[in-house]
Length: 161
Image (cartoon, rainbow, N blue to C red):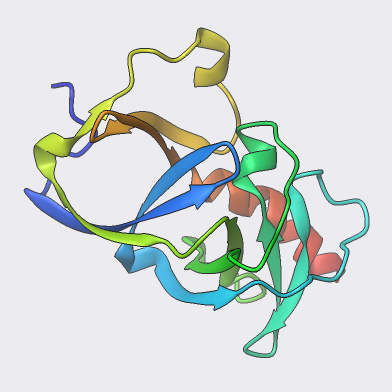
């Protein structure tokens, strides 16, 4: 089967524009969309961790998928958004993290046959950390982020903070 989804006929998702491309995530992991605010620096963090912010009285890391996956510098402007997502682990110190978006995410009702694996991806890109899958939605390339891999890098950073 060449579709990424194989369990449900449709899934409510958000299409998130990030520097260098687009990501797609199910609504069930999205907590809130916030206007951009300058984050605090996190010492010894990977280049794709933009910083951290205090959200709901917790230190919440902010990441750039543009830096991690598309290898572009993270720039923010008045249209930038922070998409707060639930983590998949049970670590109480990291219940959420933020993803830097270039604009407000677009809600979509994703039909099963609309998301296809992207056959035009270089072999080296298939193994990039932070990517669960390269896909195509409405003939446009999108990524499905690997939230577990991202969390694994963020957990030690939050423990130090």
